[in-house]
Image (cartoon, rainbow, N blue to C red; front, side, top):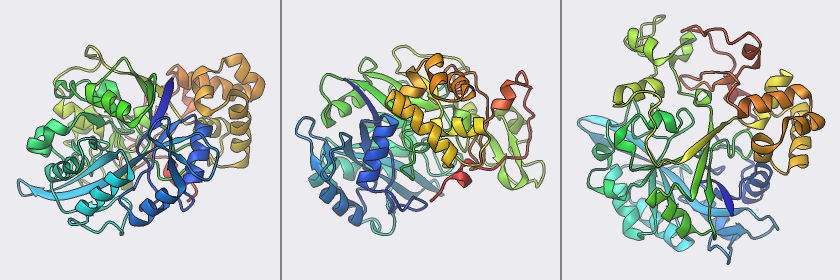
Length: 430
């Protein structure tokens, strides 16, 4: 069976998240998206954990969890994200980690341990005063079936390789607990080929998740993991991640990395963004205000890479680049938001015809898409699928933008500095 999993999301108890997030809404939109396994997010928060215990029940076929109050078939895995803050070499380090745990008993035991390092009720993604190595030691001390995955490892802030608060190697961050790290979450601003440039990452499984702060289909499942298994269970997923099983791990679903908020280096306040080579020429200094640029992940990878662009190791998990269907429709219609009525109408007609969003994006033929929607929408979907759609790169917290007009201009060469368009994060309703 094919399993499409998004294991990193958040509840409404995390900062800057939708107030509408609950089990029923997550399950409903996961099915529309085409996800059949999602993380719960935020099991460290006492109120959300209580809600999960009330609204989820164990699925006897898989040992995972399913909605207790609706007939939805979406399965849930208990997950959370935490922020560890500590000092190393006289510098403050802030590292985010994705946690996986098999059941409510182990989740409760994890919470008991982590509560010693910081308040779990303040934020769904709690800040803990402990080192990354201490976190892994505590988590694995509860159960060997727990897993810690460094989250969005290239984000400038709050990540393993972050330009402002991270490390240059996994071993520097996790010390003697590195032996328990098996997978890395690449984040929206990078994709597998960018990570393949570092030989030190070859032994790790690269995973992709949405880190969604809402249930909306242009957020949840925008990145995901595709497994092919005979029987789904927590143990099977854990085994795939730990063994880097590229036969059962079919591929990751990636947004174009240019879509991510930190792909290029830049300075939002000055409207300046640059590809890595240009940022290096400027010494990572903004040419407008002369302050330090927010270093994009492309530039950061250039600094640490020991391989050229285009290098592909043996026996790696594949990947497929997509963009959210709502964003594609919105770009074609020229609307200011993927939540407008006209976008929803087109989105609903397509997902109703083909079953879910992934089926539309990955499998639906052009002629059939054209019969259901505007031909321009159909053509745009295929362009994205085939990697022919241009995305203006994101930078310094500004999402990248799908720019279909560029395709009609024979892909004019992009300037190295530009004034940003409206951020996609500004488009989304709370």
